[in-house]
Image 1 (cartoon, each protein chain N blue to C red):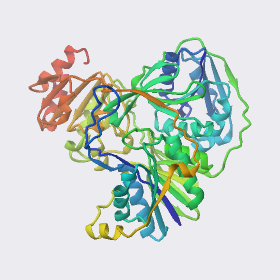
Image 2 (cartoon, chains in turn purple, red; image 1 turned 135 degrees about the horizontal axis):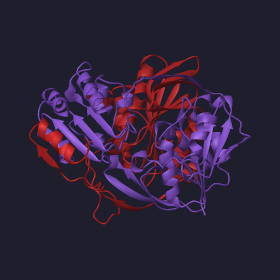
Image 3 (cartoon, chains in turn blue, purple; image 1 turned 45 degrees about the vertical axis):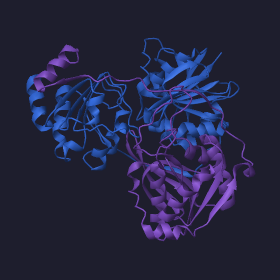
Image 4 (spheres, each protein chain N blue to C red; image 1 turned 180 degrees about the horizontal axis):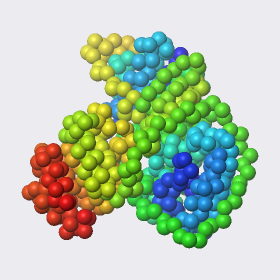
Length: 314
Length: 248
């Protein structure tokens, strides 16, 4: 039977929603135990949150000053130690997970399965390649620890219940390198819903035209209580910061409603939104590729259409 | 300072890859091949460091079949000093690629290794991190800014939460994100010059690398199709359609 170690992702004392999605994938493996590992300098609050996720057997905490900021170089040796006795080590396909998990895999001398979409059996998974233009079935060897990142958009978050799994402190005898240091994290503080978990996302592309013009996108998003995303073109042009990029190399999202304004729909962008419930495209160009996958399309000038939508919403 | 740059050849990013009907792979016959876009960014960053006087020598590394030479010549034409071609039949998986790089690092002793954050064929996003682990050195992945001074790299990284800055003592592995730079175009005279630049050919088997190709791909499938939806005439029609779907 499988025993799975799930690496919790957290920031500023809050558990990242991707962790509950990883637990879902772990549950799909049919494990006898799913333990969540929380590395931190003060991991208790995050551990308490993780303990409520349904399906979690135990939460293990490692408290060290070096864990104040997640750095792959210091986290990976601890995880590799903690992984002893587990058949699987899962992390989220967030930038943190993508940075960290291959380092864990290499320390364990095993391959990694990136971006798991489905679990076929304990050692067989599907994952996307070529920007999602092909889905491969991959089989990991039965005699090695399976290290994998879980593609958040493919999994629903495991529910949080009232009961709590036990939390246990773990002492790890791992020597940590000092060659890598955290300097700072610049976050764009916003009161809007989080792009990766919001049920509604409004996105703008090159067609929005400027940083100032992006205000119309923000305004509509606020009216609809939606998160705001962008295409690579809009980020490259400096209209919006990088953390809003949706696509192959940006964020892969699966909202119930995705509305794209002035986005032509390069395959690299489409790969980031394919799992959305309903895709709405508004573009001046009737031949824009985004219309090929949109559930609802409207050809026209976004600056004329957005006020009309707002008026119709009342 | 010496910089080692990973320079992989992949199906061009403009090609819409098709899965073969029998599920045995993707159709690559006659498809345009190009440098992995992130690797062009890696090479460009190395060239800029050399132009600033920070680096002296740039070595590009390709792992692949015999016909990789033309691709490596492009990297030399872009400005690399020399190339190493590790010859293999197929494409090694990331762990094998990382172990191969480690062997080359032992020979070359670079101060910095710059790789693309992912190759746009397998989209694995692993090799740089694995190499840093095996080498026991820092990793700075998804770089959008890189500065080298006083024996360390200060790297701004594109992360989900925003922009993170870390310091890494050299030698270190840096992997590139899209906004690190815009790679230059190759000029005709440089293509001529590149013909006389050296390419070391090393057989993979001679390196003594323990293969890490542990994953077996058993099937290739096209992604689930999203069918073309309905077109509406105006904003009112759009709002009505959304209401009908229960989304408003």
